[in-house]
Length: 591
Image (cartoon, rainbow, N blue to C red; front, side, top):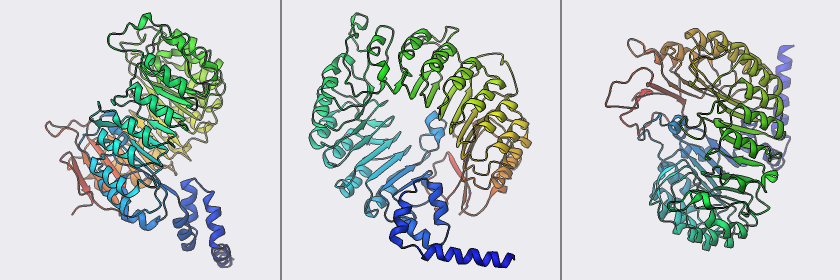
């Protein structure tokens, strides 16, 4: 019977492979966008793999050293869109040395020489030099419609100007949080305005780039399709003409209510004009005297970012209660439990909530209301059932609050919690039962971060994470566990986990190696803080084909304590890196 069944499956496979015309198969695959589903399709048979290769339009390479551009081109010769990441996420928090690597040069050279259909390029946390941009523009200027240099560095405003005047089909130019040389030169904005009439998105938010109101006005006059404009600091009274012209803009971020020599308190923003199309807003350095600017437009807002404002808890409440249609809200923890209760009562359509840690010495945080605890967490869970993304910094937490998330927030696919170290006493520890209830209830979770304080999650809690994280693909854990048994218990579950980041957990090298071998889907592991073995060789137990292991010491000039030592391990078809700086020691493969 077993042999007949296997033979039937093989015959069915042949029918599926050759009974569908390639054209029809390619059209069907075109509607399959999830990369996991595409990967599964490509494994059906060699024929389907070839059709997938020719019909795949977008690929994300989560680690630039995991493959080569030549190999990627052979696998997907018809790519139209590519997203490429290099430096680990830890680089965003200054945990990785500047010289770690991540040069875009080898990729840019190959992308420019081949990839004949490439229209969209997104580089994230990479070093992009001026020569790279020159090569890219020479090869792709006639067809590039989207270029995102996301948290990148190494290039200047001269290169941005080259992009602006050469890429006349460019619809998206994204530079957010990039470090750019010659930042005082803003003529690139004039170049963009005069050379491009199809631009829809311009984003240089949270950069140091200068932006003159004159050039910005020229831009919105000439780019009639502009929908998203996210700029650097520019005095809001100088942007009145811009907003009266920009009738198609739906999202704005940047501006500023501070300028040297200006008396901010004497200005009245009550009658400030925003276009009726504007539904997503982020304003820099807004305080008590300026918050009235939002009131006439608050009811229409779908996204509001108050992270970079000087508002108290009560002022957050006054604004939020006027925003019943919010779908995305980003704030600092000065909003407090009181503010989150107002959010829960008002914002029933909320889908994304981000609460970042504020400055302990500014923004009203010295007020006892400016803290987030289980009270605010439970209010949001019960009042905002449509949440899909939730990142929050809390000062106190209980199991009951986490259980409320699992019970009420069933649509979550991304949940991230950080327990701050402000309070001397936490109401309840460990949080094992709360984490279990959260994971059991939130079955749609794909990304999970739980960064707490020592003692907040025991080995039992790590076992629960392994048992109930069936679909989670990315996980960040901080200061969790009691012993090596915790990470071993976690590794017995998590069947879908591809990317794992650990910080301050201090498992042994041997336990980390065993866990990496046990997690069958794991493709990437980053660890900061672990117990070194006497010989330093226990990590080699995780050695396997195509598995790169690197040891990172952030500061070469001083002895590195255990809490700063880092391990980076990842699958790679490219072999060992050839550009390792002194701070990175490749452990495997060896030459």
